[in-house]
Structure formats: C-alpha cells, structure tokens
Image (tube, rainbow, N blue to C red):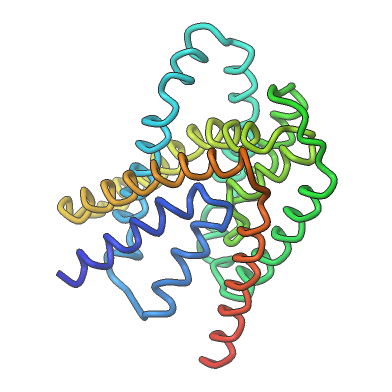
Length: 257
C-alpha cells in the first residue's frame, strides 16, 4: 500500500507538472528527497510509466491535430520533425550525465529562478501576435526543448518562453510546445524501456499501470487548464510559484546539511 500511495502521488505530480511551466523533473526529484522515498519511485519502471501516461495525455488532447498533421499538413510535420532533433540528440548524448550529475537541489534552485526570469522578460517583450510557426520558430523552440533536459528548466516553460520571444500568441505557443513534446516524451519513454531491457529490469506491472493512469488523467486536466488559462492570463503566477519553490528547496537544503 505504501508503494501504491507513492506511485499515485508522484504520477499525479508528473501529470500536472509535465505540462504546467513549473518543471516536472524538479518536483519528481524534490518530492522523494523531502520525504526520503526510495524504491519503485526512483526506478526505470516508474520513469517509463509516467512517460507513457503523459504521452497518453497528449494523444488524447491532440489526436485530431496529429491526424491532420500526418495526413495533410506536411509543412507542420516537417517543422515538428526538425524541432525534435535538438532534444533527441541532446537526450542521447547527455542523458546519463544529466541523470547522474545534474539532479541536485541547488542546480534545480538556479534553473527554477533563472528560467522564471526569462519567462517574465518574454511576457514583457513578446508581441504575442502570431498563431502560426515558421521554420525559424520550430528550430528555436526545438533548441529550447533540448535545454529542458536540465532539471528545473521545465519543457513547457522554456518552449512557451521561446515562442513568446518569437512573437507567438501565448495559447498557440503552448499548443505548439505540446505538439513538439509528443515525440520527445515518446522518445524518452522508448530510451528508458530500452535501458530496462538491456539491464534485465523486472517491472512491477500493477504499480506500472497505476503510474500510467494517474499521470495520464492529471496530464489531460493540466493540458486543458493551461490552454484555457493562457487565453486570458500571463505566465506570472507560474513564475512566482517557481521562485517560491526555489526558495523552499534552498532553505530545506541548508537545514539538512
């Protein structure tokens, strides 16, 4: 029961924070660190489950868009392919280094604050006039997505910010961010699955399924919430949340050391 509780809680956290611009990795690293959780929640099985769950969220929310892109909108398909390449290359090249060396509370504090500043600047200077992307937009946002491999950055946070700097409307920047994240999240799940086969990892399928469901359901809610929220409001509330979270982590780090 204890493991089920942990998986449900972290699946919910993953589903929400994967799509809100507040960094899922930061929350998934910090929550077990705060409560001293080990075992399944730090396993490859859990990583695969939450990636699969958030992939289901994206496909549920955007299956019509993907159908249109695959059947008719070849230009958008090309942009998404090209935009995915930077994150794919960075993931293959630096995945192990990031997992082993950058999942540090102080690094997360820095990235939460710094990207929050970038988000605030983007809100101030972004023109928010366009509801379509160019090749340049796709490459810039795709490069930003590669940076999101660093814990605390937030995939949606940095890609929406890049879209705002390029003059995209907030809600459209978020939608393109989610479309671009679909192959990246699928790729991350495949990479973890390959690693699990390579090392002969044994999955606990009951916990795996619970992780998938909890991440998928909350992910759908988070996607729909953010797209509607950004039609009316700026990113400020998420920026302030990032800074408060960074302050809490910083304080806890020094209280524990």
